[in-house]
Length: 462
Length: 93
Image 1: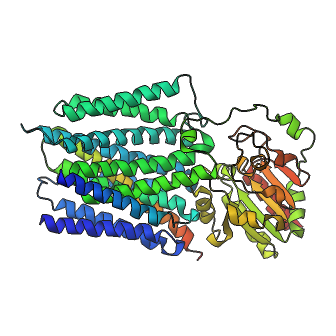
Image 2: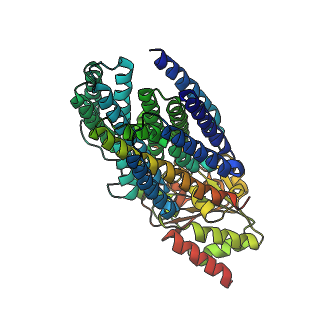
Image 3: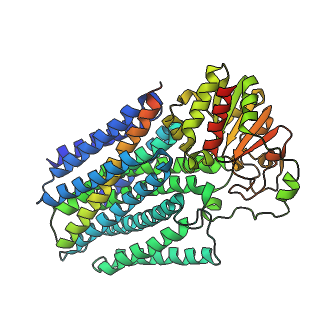
């Protein structure tokens, strides 16, 4: 029977791998996701046949409650809130690992025999990674939701405190391994790891959130893998490491797109603001040209090619549907419309793509940064919607700037640039953007959604 | 010890498989990838089910049930929301 169950788990693991493979193309992605779900169902059903299970009431109750909450969240969530939801789900995966490890520790210390060392190591790892993931994710959720300041929160001695906590976590892990029978050590470990999880995410802010969300995703996988070692269960180990790898790759991609190292992002050491760089007055002084939706509509009338560059501001003002309508209207007039999406635009990897997909923009129209830059000089109007640092030419021109070397979308090379933005306030990097005062730039101040709707009205009137 | 080494072998090999597959996923699908991989990391539900059903003590049962709830939210919510997102990508193709 046990062999049969294990073969079933193997099938489930294969389904997960095929599921992820399906995600390599939008056409096969839905099927891929379904394969993953089937794998999960199979794994759960097989587990229910395990002879260790004596009573089913509690399990069924847990499955029903969890399933109902999960389904409600998945159905109700707005696409703009997707980063928060993913953060919360990461956290739930983490806490589940902590609880399973805690239960396993108790079960294995009930009898007189001492549990094996590799089991207690795995239990400590599972509790540790799980707790860091859970609390880190809760802080990330709070930040994304705006409950706690979206910006980096830095305080003196932060590094020292973190180092002390890390040392304490290691010491407590050793205690768990040496003396597993005392449950105190484990829960102390979970407690200290929780504080560490909070402190690790607190200093990361705003535009760096995609990196953290991706990293926590990776942690939630590693926590599951650690739980797999606790239970000597291969399906958990395989799945956990797949997710761990996936999160790590996304983290790497995000870091590369900001030209920053992971440690740099995690410890909030962005180059000090205003250090010798030009001030906002020097950059903007009298050179910024403000425009109106009507004027932009006139620009569009003669444009052959328009490129839309969305940023977090588009998500904040929920402008994706008007933006898609504007694009459709322009296309109906024979203008070519495309979208240039920067890898770190928004608050999580692929955030803009999901929002635009929600607004029925075909994915073929979404071009990545390199594709966009290849022929941006042929674009008549580049429309920047709520993006700032990712289109700041300083990254290319000033080696001393805070964002020096960060790959950007070169909108300044388009024939005309229209930037929709609430004000001239700096982006997350805290530096002024000379793009706004270029000869070929026009600023349209205001809320993105309203501005785009006004453009549509003006285009229809003409 | 042998179990542990087998587990470690599987762990390392699976990470390589993960790297191979996931580097091929286009940026457009990065958000669904996160929510989808998130859903499958809810596989912890397997361990949670065992803890809550084996009735060692009241405490292990409570820990197990809580873990079942959290992990199930993760799985069900993750798969459903990924499906919802992917359906939006699909309908235009």
